[in-house]
Length: 264
Image (cartoon, rainbow, N blue to C red; front, side):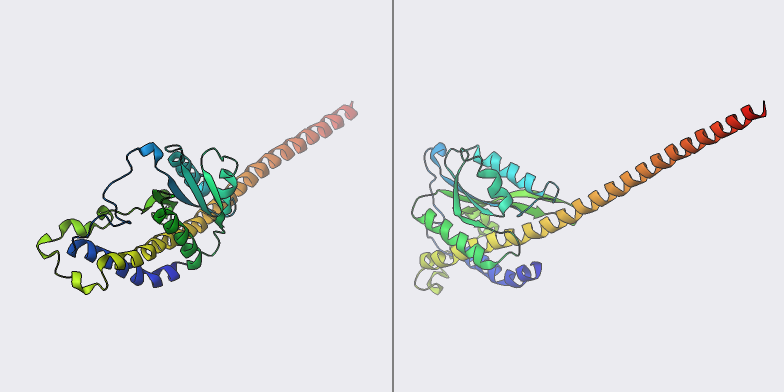
């Protein structure tokens, strides 16, 4: 999975570079994926969350951390939609329908992350966003910090902002129109094409990183269980030997005591 992600990184990095270049060298504003204004009432914002968990348990706190972060976000708004990658998250939130509307058609297995799943979810999110059915979209997943540590993360997918592309803050606005003519038919049309692909890349990367974190958490949980089992066996063996030794000692004492009585 990580090899597939590494193989696709140049493509998604190029998309990021192109988006950054358009934002720097054009005067376009109020693009639908980069809106200038937010909805007036924050409580009326309708949010969509893609919750990435595993399909089953036995992975330590892996699922719990993602579910906890997702639940915290859902409680911040009354208008939520949930999509799932991994059945553990779906099984948890389908019993708590008061928190969010569950889009059960978009619930996929977490095993073997596939690009087509990311594409299917992206198409749904983009369609809902462009039609005004949702105002914001996020993905909640587990990010691997290192081989031993992982943390639940929240990433905004839509709408995007210039802050998501740090290079734009250092742009030279004197050359704003210099490269606009390079984008045919227009920068707006180009952005309409590449932003959904960029969102797909974010989701796909989150799927793979979460899958890797899941396997790592599962191995850690199994190792801890094995170590605890060995420790328990050692304690029980020691206790058994002590009880057995005490029983033998008692039996010997009784035999010796009985033999002593026979002498009299």
